[in-house]
Image (tube, rainbow, N blue to C red):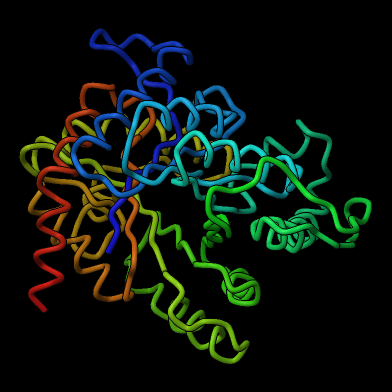
Length: 343
């Protein structure tokens, strides 16, 4: 069981409530990653967004900085929006991170729950599904590190094309991120790629049909049936349950209210927040003991190989994020492993 951390590089506030610059936020992400490496975290993922509330639009550049400042944990995206990018350039950038990190790079590919990158890079949202399907078929070949012969609908064909730099160890570990679509689960199985479930709301147990579908599809498609399954889910850790919830709530409220205005959701209430932070909710918020028990329960229910905690939340300050990272590595990870090994 691997235990990782994810961040979107959310633009935070300082002790006086003033917004921190995007530049400082990026430097803070690197500091958080260095701490994560020191305290035993297995994976550190950096998301890609193209809007003013997130500082990271080029995660591979940030991962490159993290690569030379860390030594052991794996590094990747969370996620790379492949639909609005060039698969060859994506591979080249991650192959570079792989070189800088001495073979520790991996990539999590997704269609993107935010759509700002599509008009920004000249893509039509009407082609949302076709773009991802076509580009994934190309990337699935690129990740092998071998010369590629490919044809599709979204770019010119390739014949025996080599792409550089080469990988430290091929193939490049590549996951498919899924938010709850059976079609996406089947797509991951079709390409023989690990599945990363984004569980950001509701009871994690409701995703059991997706993990069952994935494993069944792997067998029917004659793919290896032991491919890993992971979960990405939000949370925050402090010394006590009460402190963790009080630290997170005002920032969670502001963050979710903004997204809600954009997507037609009502603003969150404290009752909804407490329900999400409860035993059957998607928020892993509380003391190390509370969070460890909740992660272990999710891992057992879904048969997970990895759990990635999305520890950044809107404007939650850097000092709280650093403490959350520290507690995750020093207390949560050992306890989760103890709980799982006891069964």
